[in-house]
Length: 337
Image 1 (cartoon, helix red, strand yellow):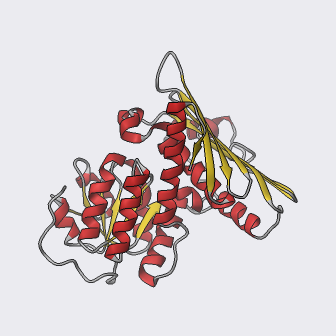
Image 2 (image 1 turned 60 degrees about the vertical axis):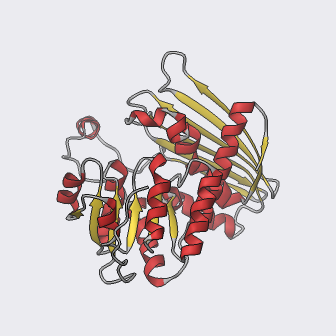
C-alpha cells in the first residue's frame, strides 16, 4: 500500500478543483482535456512519463502518491487495472473523491469493497465507463426510456479493435482479457439499457497463430426477459476500430454502425493523409469528445452534489457480470449472476 502523507486533506471542491492524475499513460491523455476544459488545477504522479504529461497539460509533478494525495481534491486513477484497488483505497483514506478507469477492479469482491469504502468515507467513486457518453448510445438510452421502441427484447453489441499495444493486456490475470477489459463497455450498456442480468453464458476463441487475435461472445439474460448478445474482437495490428448496436423492442428497432456513412467523403489524397496520421487534415468529428463529456459530467456531480450518469455501483455491477462471463468461459456452463 502506498504511503500517505500525514498532512490533512485539503478542503473539498475548492476553486479551481485540484485533480491528481495517477498514471500518465494513454488513457490519462484522453481524460486530461476534460479536466482542462473544466478549469481544474492538474497534478500528476506516475512511474514513468509524468514530466511529459505535465509539460503537455500544465500539471504539477509529484514524486510519490502521498504528496499528490495531500495536494488535491479529486484523484483520477489511470493506471493499469491491477493497481486500481490500492490507489483508490489510499485516496478514499485521504478523504478524496475518486474517478477510476474501468474496470474498477478485477473481481466482484474487490469492486464491492471499493464501493463500500467510498460509502463509509462519504466520498464519490465514479467509474470511467466512457461509452455512456458516446452520443449514439446516450440517444438510444433516451429512446428506450421514452418507450419509443416499446418493450426492449433483444440487444446486440459489437466492438472491434487492434490488440492493445501494452503486453499486460494479454495476461488475463492482470487485465481480465477481452471480456473484462474491452467487452465490459458493452456489458455495461446492456445493463444500462435492459436492466439487471440474471444469467450469463460466454465463449471465447484465441487464434492458433497468435494469442493477440481473440474473439469473445457473451449472452446475458436479463431479469426483464430481454436477451443481450455482446461480441468483442481484438484483432491483428491495423484492425479498424468499430462499434455497433442493434436494439429491438416490441414497437421498433434502433441500429448504429460506426463504420457507416459519416456524411464526409475524402478524395484519394485526403484519405492517404488521414491514414498516415501526419496531422494536416482537420478534425472532422461532429460531436464532442465523449471523454471530455464524461469528465465534465463528473465535475458537475462532484461540485454540485448531483448524480453522475454512472456511479460506483454501476461499475461494480459491470465487473460482477463480466466476472460471471469469465467463470462461464472456465466452466463451459451458464452462470447465475
